[in-house]
Length: 553
Image 1: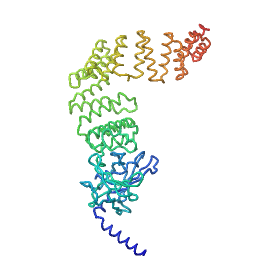
Image 2: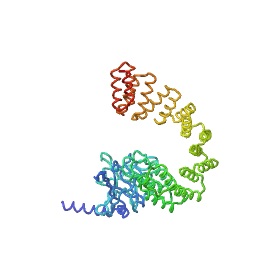
Image 3: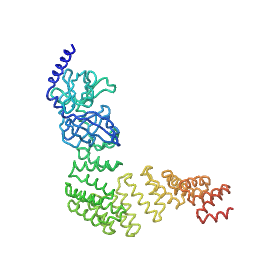
Image 4: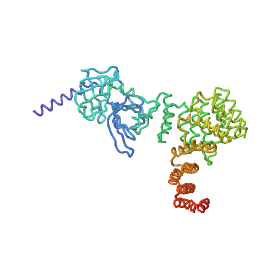
């Protein structure tokens, strides 16, 4: 009897293997196993997946990627590949689309969804041989008005989650998955998985931020450029460099990737490396003028804003030559503007002024040009009226009504008026600036306005501003010392003591605060405490303390 049963099983298995169409067996060649790992290299998760694109695009379950630092796949031939990037994911359907750096054989999708009664197969491999299981469709549902969701009878075949589900012709229908309780199996339409794409804002996608793998560079150039810009907010410098290199590989004739990589090399102090990258950009970029202009900008910014006297290969003359080359190829005002900025940095203020003013008659006319012209006049020690007139022009060309665009120019005029002794006019501009910034001004601004208010004896406003500066930056001892001093001056003695104590918590060696505290305590009839504070100031070397001690002792 046992022999008979064994024979029947063998015959049935043989029939089943014969019943499996050759295209179904062939589908196993596109299947792979996926493994993900933590930062320390320990295994995090594993499943199956399959290729849906000839350029290394595959899909699998999303769950193994969550909090993973890296991932690898092993294809049906035993070849191992690192997962390079994540194209996108969907948490609800537990699907992840990603890319490896290899040419791959994708499964061809079926043109139409399967219906009840159709033959469907789950395909995998074992020891490089096809491993195939038939599936019985219980029902199918439609989601998002166009995608099929297949529910099968019974549990999924063991260890086949993430495998492709195909029809008799080996055409792809979906990805096999088990329900959370394991009681049933289902498949999500492959067209839904294939619709998942990356875009310029994918770096802000909270779901994709759950994995350590980087986001795939969009194949739309505009979206890719946006994503590249967004990488500047990434804290991982290694990953930022990879994004720049991804962009260069996909868009070798665009300047953006080379510039992003060069900027990172400059930030590391690798100036020779940056030079090499920009030489490549100027040879390969389709927009030669832009490549030369960007190279001029990078050199200019390094020379103007980075204090590094050990590197002397770049000069303002080099930067100027690149800017002039850009303008000679494509005479855009923006390239001439860069020339003017470099000329200013070289100290030729008269020439720079003429260039800035000349540009105000072009399509580039904007507030920055008038502001820069005002800086030229300031450096030339020109009459205050000339400088103010230029700053007035800077503000006048800003959009009306004035908004945050005009704020820096209003502040600049206020600061110039302040330095010129026109305190009330300066205060007017400071107040306008504060309004335009809608409460987003920094502590330095409120300290500046406080100082101006003190000069015109607007003590209440000054108290408000120095207190506000201290609230914004509570670790700056100077603000509390100034606050305490002003409170003492307007006879707010208890507040003066409190402010002095706050200052001393941050800067215990601040003798000014001990002097202020001591004088305030004297006014509060707390002589012993006041003398102790004054004595502490004396111990810190403040010569004023001895005079006060003699006066109040």
